[in-house]
Length: 236
Ligand SMILES: [Zn+2]
Ligand SMILES: [Zn+2]
Image 1 (cartoon, protein in one colour):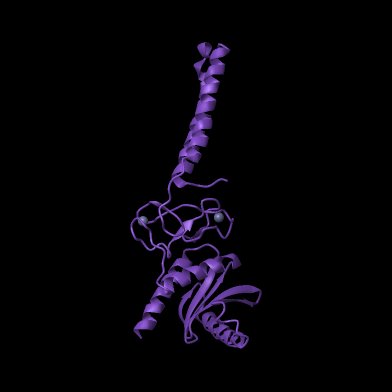
Image 2 (tube, rainbow, N blue to C red):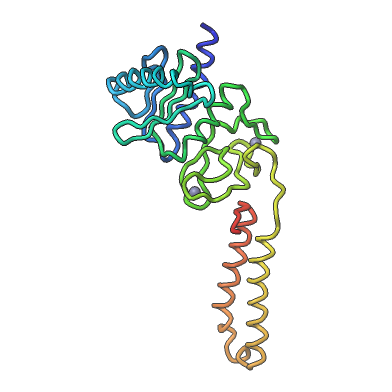
């Protein structure tokens, strides 16, 4: 019983993460073919789905698909469902974007095998945390190396506990100064060039206000450099 409760409580935590992700429509955790915890689904619907998927998996197991891969994608009424047989009695079914399935499966693997990703600075469990994609803003699992929606590669994300930047494996990210140097350099450089040109043309003596617009643009560029440095957002 203790083993079951341990596994089930871990999977309940996975459902709590799924609740906070974009692209997840509904989910159900089943035990011996019956719904144990449901996300965005009627009980009757969850019961029907649990029964149908269980049967489907029995049918599939005859063709020895299961055992080689630890999850299956089942198409039902034009919807793709992720179904993971955690143990012979416990199953997780998720109605989600196809591109999310591999990532959700990694989360399940890490959680049930006690191999969660931890922040190397503070030890916080990162596997069960969501982050916002720096490009498209969708809520995705923190452990995603590539955003499943916009495909941007994410080198650094903030640990929700200590705020340090970490990789998808939880190790600290060494900050790159490239974005700061690039944008800061262009910003400062153009302002100095404007200053020299304005001075050379004799405009500066007549109206120093001529520098307001280039000044604002330069400050914006430097600000952008600082932002990209802080977030370590990769543009290339
Ligand atoms: Zn994205
Ligand atoms: Zn941390």
